[in-house]
Length: 345
Image 1 (cartoon, rainbow, N blue to C red):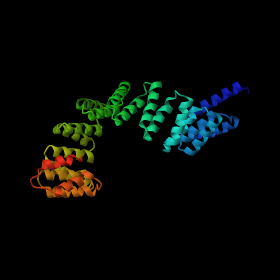
Image 2: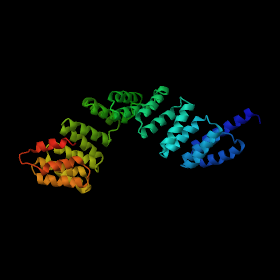
Image 3: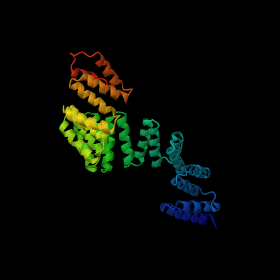
Image 4: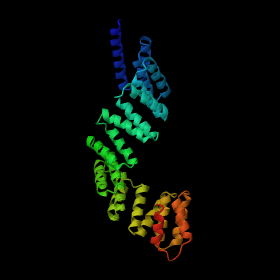
């Protein structure tokens, strides 16, 4: 058999094995590919395929072994470096993951998958600026890569570069209008910019994509709380509670909003229910303390603050508040106390 015929035969064999792999016949692939290695011992493609198959069945050590063999045969095989990087990444070995992703991009500067994973690894390694560079490489070669645009929006938001974050989230939305996480994250950026009109706009667009998302309903409710529109906030919180009646967080948001609206009895009743369901809920005791202090019952308020501290011993703002109460004067208004409290919020 001449070289050309032999290569054609190998290509046909690999195509057949890939077809079996796609049908999830992993053990048949391993058995047949290993047998074919006796005929084609220098085929890095076969070693690669065996590595991919072992990775698929979670045999990571064996997968790494075969990827390394593929690289020994063909050191310029950028795909094996990418897969090796992915395996190390799965094991939280970011140093080796980055090393192989970088090698893969050096061998093939237009290999988008490696650039994208490199961005993920850099971000997880607390190197946001390096992650940005990697994601921008993705965009350079694939301008319609929605997830890279989304991740750029996310990182720029964390870096407090709101304008860049908004730009990338909007690009992600333009390319994939159904990627509803982009809407809610964009809303958060506008909230941080104190642009509540646009924040509400994008939260509502996100809600249109997923009307049963309790998280978005809570976010919209909290936005209305920040605008002192308590009744509207309660509407959204109650919708969220209807979706998930056991949600402690949503119940607490309702109770806190009732407190802010001056509906202390309703708030107290709900907070006591929360404590029955979750006896170590730090926030429930804290809010009950606030309510009793607002009602002028400072002794009872202090008791709830102490109870709250028992579940959050390192909470500095509570200690500061209690220190203030220890020198409490009857001439100091409850409003003054809570203005002091907010300094530590």
